[in-house]
Length: 560
Image 1 (spheres, rainbow, N blue to C red):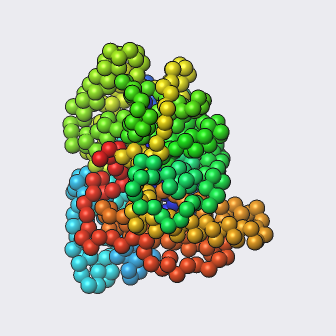
Image 2 (tube, rainbow, N blue to C red):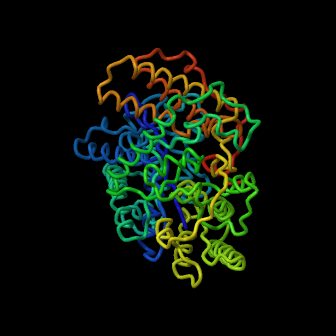
Image 3 (cartoon, one colour):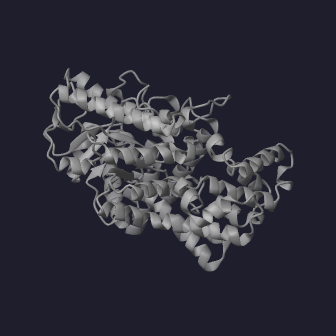
């Protein structure tokens, strides 16, 4: 089972809708487009693609603003500085030009910059100019517009670079892109994003893709339900100075219900499966997922190991489907080793050897489990479907192409989706215990247990208490109540907590710290309560010396 998780957090400023980071649309034109194209190329492939609802809404927002610009010609319709820089760099002045130049160089150096000689030269020239005290005076419109075009070409999917005539023609150019060409590139970006929803619907209708979802804004459900859930795997870890997240079950229900509604609006179906945010599960989480009719969910291999160890339970072939307390909900656990090989290791291998190695590991698992009496072992490969590929040559084209081809044709290996596998009614293994945890190391330490993470939870709990007080004392209309609940959901997302603490790149820590405080501040404004002064102070101060983190910190291995 290959399960690709597509996720970006809420990047919009809640006051004016301006995108603070461009990663949603850049991953769309690079990774979501490429993944659909690979599957269209190999109709024998079967995969699960998991979408986070708040990502779908942001993709729709990009489609709307680009369509409005194409219709009215007003740059004010665009709410992403990079898109404005692509079309009208002259509209940006002073420090905004410097910020644009820096943003247009945020790309994996070896794979996305140095691959294209004209882009590499522009980046080198821009870096030199940015060292000047008055850099904004030297960043010409020509330089910024050419840099913007090359940035978007580098962030285009490999299937576009190979097959899209417009993109191929642009790649043949050195620079000096005229306004009408940049307008055409913007239009192509809008069309690509707009086409994604239909492409994945058609793949699902054809039975190639099972579409699944994560609750609305990607919350860590076990922590909303029990703020001390992290101590199940790490009893000695420091905890937030708050006893609980008030009304946590109500909030989890909101994320599930609102997520289901958004998912249905985009894909016209109700998903059978839920990849919980970060694979984070607990017994209470499973109960709620079953109550909402989900047939399957999944987590990390170390969660399984922790749970088996606590119950002194032995399972000789772990590649099985599981259940807990006679629930109808079925559990799958990620093969951390093979998932991490795709996420991290194969990027430096020749694709042919990587595909051979991957298949050999699967055959070895099958042989071992069959020897132990398990005739149809199942191997879930679950990972980020977007961030790995920029570290591969050609956006991972050759690995994915070879993998889909080989697995589609392999004599003893079969690609299936979770839903298709469950239709065969496999006998589940009964888990006698479940230790709350996630796919990252089997615990919840990525989101709670360090001083900065705990401080963020304390601020969120305080905001929730203010919310409940305002809700009880006010006369909120349905529209206002819906707006406020949605803003609270954004604040409850997991991504803020991921980046707080030691060991992350300083720039990312600062970006997400600012965004988290911006979202909390807006929540207080919407519920008409005083904004705490502490929100003017960073949650987390990055280390003085920046750190190098594997994959830039956006992905982590399943086991240490």
